[in-house]
Amino acid sequence: MNGQFPIGTISPWRYFASIGFFLACLLSISDDDNVLPYWLNFVVWQVQVFSCLSFFIATHTLMKGVLARQNDLIKLTINSVIAVTVYVPFSLLRDVYIEQETAYTLYALFEEWQNMAPVALISWVAINLPWLSGFQIKRTENITSSSQEPTQTIDSIANKNKNVTIEPISINPETTEPRVEQQDNSATQPDHDFLKIAKIDNIDSLICLKAELHYLKVVTEQEQHLILYNLKDAIEALSDIDPTLGAGQTHRSYWVNPNHAEKLLRKNREGELVLSNQDKVPVSRTNMKKVKGWFE
Image (cartoon, rainbow, N blue to C red):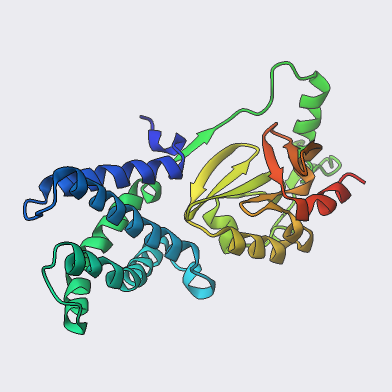
């Protein structure tokens, strides 16, 4: 597969919905002790699995500050422990009121947590593993259309080389080779954790961010890929790099680099922003005035 993993083209919404449905089917089939009719047992397991997944995803999405800046594996571990602890009181209701296997006591809660925590941790890491593995989970796109004018291509090349400074050629008595030096960008491009995690070499190439469950889609001029990150924390990190980038949120789930905004379209009482790669992102009513200011 040349380092490519096809799951990179699947939306996290579809991925986790498919995983949840498959697990619920598997658990309902393997549940031999259940006295409920098969169809009702199937429905109960679907509700339980999807509610559990919702707890895990919500817990990870709400992780802030120090917890959100940890290694991905550590974040998933912490997320799993917190989610299981919060979910266990609800999970026990099934055993108490549906299967009537136990009483709702503190000991029953602890026993339920003890039984669920290891399995939940392993399962949660395994479910997220494809996104965190060494595979290149991304889709490379060539946003330069073949129908574009040659001048546009030349301009794009010039922009990419704008940080290269060519000094006048000086003739050394001992050598006649010209000397070309590349400008050091370390002073103008600070080293930030978010840029490393998002694999962004140049902040100017970042087009937009989109929150998808507890993942973040990063769209640049070269490619788009998913990272395990929170949109709010990403916006705060970008604001630290450049305060003007902190005002790039156009919608609850979207952030846009204003430099890549090409056109604002009216859509009912809201708006739609056309980006440099021709993607369209929604603009909420509360952000319409701010986005209009980008074109003034």
